[in-house]
Every structure is written in C-alpha cells, then in structure tokens.
Length: 149
Length: 400
Image 1 (cartoon, rainbow over the protein chains, first blue to last red):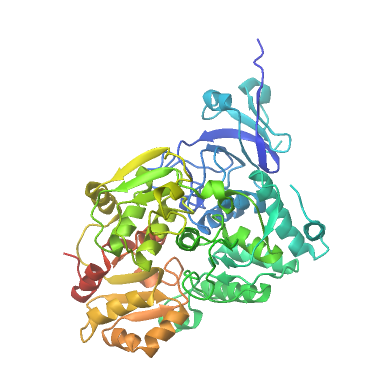
Image 2 (cartoon, one colour):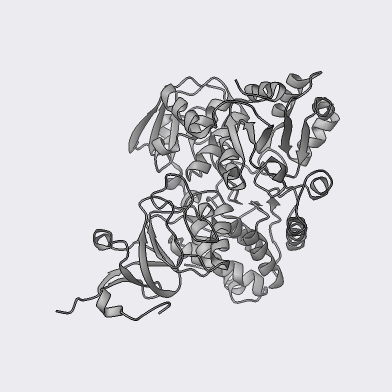
C-alpha cells in the first residue's frame, strides 16, 4: 500500500521552496554558537549539541541572542554551505526573521499543531513557503531525490 | 499591508535600489508580524558589529545607493589606531574595521561607536517611536525611558534608518507592552551587580514581559542598565517593568494593563547564588580585569579610579567606554589615576571583537555575565564578581 504525503498548512515569513531531512530541536537556537566549518551546534547543554544543522530542514521553537550575533552566525554557515535549508519555527522574532529574509533562507511559522505530533527526526520534508505548505514525504515517494526541489 | 504613496514609491525604486531593498525587507518583516502599516521613526541606533555579515549587508545597501534618512548612532567595533599600535590585530581584521567604519560613514551614520546611546548622543523621549538594535539599548529605551522600539536586528534597524519607517507591530503597540509575568524578588538586592544576576534568571522567569516587585525603591541607572542587558542577552526581553520605578509601571495595575499576571515567579537568594555558580569560572588567579559590557558610565569609571588611586594593579585592567565618557574621565583626572595604576581606559571598543588575542586562553574577572557569555567563542574565561571585588582582584592578581 502506497503511503500518502501528508500536507500541513503554514505561514510564509521568508520565501522559497526546498526539501530535505528534518532536524528537530526542543530548544531555541543561536546560530553564533554553531561551528561554521561543520555546522555543528557547540552550545554546551543544548539538546542538539554536537549535531550539524547543515542542509537540514530545522524545526525549532525560536531564535535567541543579541541583535548582531544571530545574523553573523547564519552568514558564516551560509558562506561555507553549512546553513540549514529551511527553518520551521513557532515564535518569530525580528532578528531571526530579518536574518532569514536577507540571506534568502526559507522560513515559515504557524504550522498546524498536528505537524508537531507527527514529525520525527530524519523525516523527509518539502517546505513551500510561497504556497504556505509543509509536507512530510514518506521514504518511497522521494527515493533518489536529492538537494533542492 | 497598507503603504502610503511615499512608501510605495520607495518600494518601487523611485528613491534608488538601496532604499527599495530596505523597504522590501521591512515589508516582509511587517507581513510576518501582521503589521497593518508603516509608522515613521525619529531616531535609530544600529548595533554595528564589525563582523562579516554586518559589512556584507551595509556594503550591499551602499552599492545599491542607499543613504540614511534618519542618521543612526552606532555600536563600537574596536579602536583601530589604538589597537594597531598597542594590541595584536591581524591585517585582515584591521581592514575589516576600516571598511566597516567607511561604509557606515558613507551610508550616513553618526559614528558614536558606543553601545549606550541612551545615556548620551541619542536619547529618546517617552512614547517616541524609534528603531534600536543592541541588547542593552533596546531594553533600556523601552523599559526605563518608555520609548517604543522592537527588538531590532542590526539589519532591520539599518533598513529603518534608510526608509525612516518601521512596520507597526510588537512593542510599538500598547497591548504588547504591558506585563504578564509577576516577578517577586525575595532575594536581597544589595548592589548594581545583583541586578546582573537577577537578569540572568531569565530561564526561571520564562517567556513574556516581566514585572518586578520587591526591588529597592531607588535603583541606580547602572542597575537598570544591568538588569536589561542581562535579561535581553540570556533571553529575548525587549521590555521589563519595575513597579514604582519605570514609567509604564507607576502602579502594579498599570504594569499589567489592568489584567491579572499569567504567572508569578519568586526569585530567592538561592536562585541568584545558583545562577552565579553556573556562569562564573571557579575562583583563583586572574590575568586581567575587563569592564564595560555595556560601556561603563562616568560613575563606574570614577568608582574604579577611587579604588586604584595611588596603588599598582597586579593584573591588566581594561575599562571600555564611549569617547564622550573618556573625554570626561580625561578632564576629571580619572584617566591619569587609572593609567598610573597600570590600567587602561579605552573608547570606541567592544569586548566581542578580534582585538583581544593576547587574552586568549587566560582567565579574567568581570562584573558582566554578558561579557563572559559572548567571548566563550573567543577563548576567554571569566570569574564573575561585583565591581568592587573585581577591582580588588585586579589589585591582588587573584579572586579569593
């Protein structure tokens, strides 16, 4: 039996359409505390400490940190191809929002509550900020697909 | 989102591609937060950071022809001439600072290089709509002065300076400024340093707008700077209220806008002690003392000068401040007193800059948890103490 893609509605913040693997954090993220060379989170005690955000669809509650360091952290990741492909958040703040917009990283919020009960680390996600959708794509439906949509 | 004809013209590129880009970003931010319209600002402060992304963005706007309608004041990078002569900076880092300085001057900023514009040079009035980035500044202007700004990023405040507008949302609106967390301070608040620790209790305070009760009736300007700087570093608090002290909280009813608090948090001596324990390196020998995150006020400079007068420091001491405060310190003989003891007072400079290589791997002492938090990435370790204990430590070369 073929598994169906499951689609959830969301709200666009920064435009774009990408797909990739989900990485979920229960904690807020400060990209300044990522190693730009590897994408790994170096913040002590963070629930993703040691894991890389590079190329992931990053699912987390919100950004944190001061007005300059968030954007610089993200910029350093981006210029080394280690930035997340897209970000799915719950509480937008001006600093993360402007960072995503100026660096053209898709960012969405207000995803249906059901999404959070369904999504697991490593799930294959298709984020279409412009259409306002996040899709969980079962393994067999995307085999062989890599990179941007 | 509603735009006036003037704003539509900016977006359409009639004022050049740079202004159009700034407006495009601001419209996207406004739409994210469901802002109904733009509102004009009369002041701006940009937390220039002298980092790669900072320079990249300001040069991108410049190349597209952008200029500021509202001249913003700016944060410090490092004092290029002083650092080239007395500290070790790489050629690349020196060039980065040179380019950053040039770019901000060209785009139309006022080169204050200070993170405390709210004390001098760019002081807003109550109710004024402004666009301020910089952690301590955002919290101070909203909370202590009652001006209205969102917790802007470097880039969003620069866009606001260019268009002279901000999208109307968040802390510009009355209903989002009122408190929803009652913070009952049962801890003994003895000095300005205790406000640093109180601000660092953000994890216990939780998400929202805190309203503090139980604090001394007449906190100093420095105490309120410290509280906001730490709250907004470890958490994301653009505004707080202190009942009977800050202007939008003359009474507890005012502070909560007539509503009941969503929750109540009690802060005890044990909470402060636990925070202090968690953030400070264990006591022992120190190689240096670092002050001025945020930039020190003339009162703080004077307190240090009085303590070191006629004595010799056993550890390096750096006091970071604005050039206006430095000028006052020079005039009042404080600089001479501090230099005679072996200390330095340095203007236009921030601790989170690539000019402190000689301190890497060393342990210092500071009164600012924020100073210790951001410099972890630069390999600096800090014992955190109140100001007088820090100065004592610098005289003895250790914290005991």
